[in-house]
Image 1 (cartoon, rainbow, N blue to C red):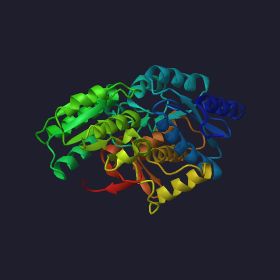
Image 2: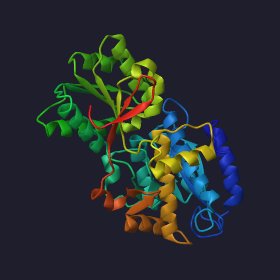
Image 3: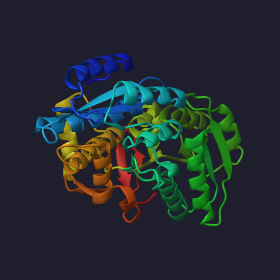
Image 4: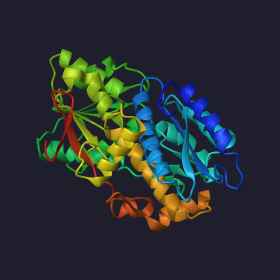
Length: 388
């Protein structure tokens, strides 16, 4: 039922299911005697669709696992996903649809900084939980946004990890940046500039591209003039892959470092032979490391949901969000409300998910999420690295 075919079929199928099982009998939106309904507004079609689809797959895998064990306090967890095309205006419309028409209990698995900037005022005004946004934007970490539940490291933390390794491991001083020309890209730009300034350095070059396009040639011409030793990239898999391939066709082989939001597996697929040696920072555990019980449970849940799926950083992040939502609902009690869910999250702060501790709310300041680096191998797989 949940496998992505198209955004329209996903919405129609699951909304019909929700309509039959979630005729609300309680006072709280999205909560019935036997189910709790979550909503997701994310990119499910178009040039960045792999991000929303894989995030969704992870969430539903987690919900399927929880439901197979009886749900949470006897209620099954359900998800409605709506396509926003990674467009702020569409995201506002779909978010309002989820809250006002579908009557979801909470939102989960949103994708992107510009979309979050547009929808956060809506969710905050209604105190609707906004769980696990796929964004490391600094504004989402404002503690005054009490309805936002982050599980990933900030883009600033990723930028610090890049620059630390590039300057200390490789001793690079000429570093350029290729970034999406919107709030997402500029957030990454700010983080990189700050990390460089701490080391007495400045950017060697900057180049931008427009969201939802692959128009990268102008950015390439701007950056190439500086002949940087490394280029850090703040974008999605399509344009970043296009830029790297263009550089290689021009005989230029700097070190490329990508942000976690890029969608690592999709990037490797897009790059093919050009992917070898490309670095991607990550904010979740290595999804092939079955020595971690969390990863073993994730793989088992994904296999049970859809045997055709393979491990992936993005779907693991979705799985973490789904598991966290379920764990918080357990703490919220048998009569959950949006307010009690958020209280449980902020009061507990640390959640044990299959032996891995996830810190949320104010506790993230004390134990910030980890950032680590991976490198694409010749065969398109990934290897985690401690040094460059």
